[in-house]
Amino acid sequence: MGVIAIDGPAGVGKSTIARQVAAKLGWAYLDSGAMYRVLAHAARQAGVGGSDEAALAALAASLDLVLEPGGRVLLDGQDVSEAIRTPEVTALVSKVAAVGAVRQVMVAHQRRFAERNERVVAEGRDIGTVVFPDADLKIFLDAEPSERARRRLAQAGEVPDGADVAAVEADLAVRDHRDRTRAVAPLAQATDAERIDTSQMTLREVFDAVWVRVRSAVRP
Ligand code: DC
Image (cartoon, rainbow, N blue to C red; front, side, top):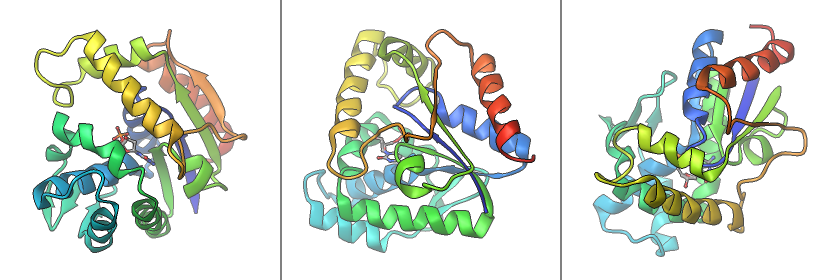
């Protein structure tokens, strides 16, 4: 099995980079955040609130969730790839992801995905620390909050219409705080991960910096 783990905070560009690296290597791409988003989406549909941990855990255990190696996400056989990116789902997801029993289910999903696909570029918050501690390469992408807010704003869909950089940055700060301070699998850099501060870098430069490390860690 081959695993490249790319972790980092919201809005840093993990998905774009992980997807590009996976495509160039011909490996599967695992967007672990999408799994938590599917659960948040399902919780909204079922009327389950972010603080009802027992109901969230039960929902997670019964979820018919499929992540396709190319990145498409299915819930009960329906493509929900876009529905899980709405501001409403984004607002709920870090609460859902803080529930220990939910994380157990999702981590098991993620490991099964890697076993099935054998070679995987996985991105998230705990991929190098918890999910795949023996990954062949661990990268921690980081950037200043204002820069992450700008990047997020440049992507359509996830932020409410009319939001400005300050509003998006404030929202990111709330999610960052929840992701970093939760009791189970908080966002943290693995001790053996390489941190790349991308604040001053273009996407292309980030890709190149990651690719150099990929080339020396795995044989494409
Ligand atoms: O990367 P993203 O914005 O799609 O992640 C959605 C949420 O899921 C975010 O609040 C952090 C959480 N998450 C997590 O706790 N662990 C992961 N491995 C991936 C995402």
